[in-house]
Length: 107
Image (tube, rainbow, N blue to C red; front, side, top):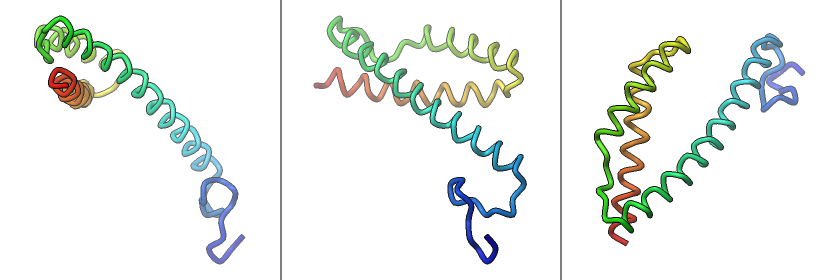
C-alpha cells in the first residue's frame, strides 16, 4: 500500500498508526451522533417556535437563556470542558433558534 495508496478507512494513508485511525473512527462516530442530536434538538425548537407564534410570545426568552447558560457552564465544568467554549456554542445555537422562531412568527 505504498506510493500514496490508502487502506479501507476513509481514505487514510496506511502508514498512520492504528491508534490514530481508531481515534479518528471514534471522532467520526461522535460527529455523526452530534449531527443527529442537533437535528433532534432543532425539531423540538421548531415546535417551540410554532407554539410561541401561536401564543404571540416573543422569539427570544432572555431569562430562560440565562438559566441555560449557567446550567451548561456548570455541566461543562463537571465534564472538564471549557465553560467559555460551552457558552459560545450555546449562544450560537440560541441565535440560530431565535432566527428560526422569527421566521416562523413572520410566516
